[in-house]
Length: 296
Image (cartoon, rainbow, N blue to C red; front, side, top):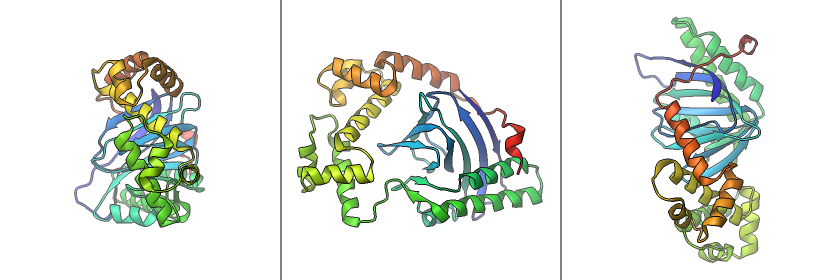
């Protein structure tokens, strides 16, 4: 569940940059969206709380002051934290130069997560879009102007959560992540990853801690459990089969790890997530933004 407010806009002609929708949401614990594919670029920026974002086999744990990009026709899934559910603003946009502007801010498919110290400004711009939503030329121009300001504020101070200053280090991380994605169903050890990319175990751990924020085995564990959660939602495989498919030879060990990861056993998660997906299927996100939040 979430308390949200969203506005959608239609455009007769394709322009360089066009606002398609915008909104604000205060979510409940474990509220999620997806797996889904969207037709436009969407940027979410977290006002408070925590959550998780999954895209292209990667998992990002995010909190206040961070944001994430959803690209057109790319399947994504995101979920609010169980204890500190996030509130966020979002803008959806398109246009002939939308991709170009995004790349210039430093956000891309390779680095879809960013941080910005201009959270209050970003929030102000989105609420201004919401407030000035009449079908008039003046409001349409104002909304487009706010969208440019929104991207400008991100460009001023954004940095990708995974972007590395050293090209060689970035290559090591990329190769290590690729190895994990291709071999997570096997009994992988840190030495296996280090040997594959031809560096020692200690340096590999240092790189992961520096650029991803966790040791290699923790990243592998999260990747496995994320895959398991996806399979529980989308397939009819038994829990034992899913455990084996995600690198766990012992179903009991898998069940304990999954419960720690999601706060509930695998079977309960499957039932809960499917009931939630069914209840939200085709449902338009709508709600109320407090009037005080719209004051600019």
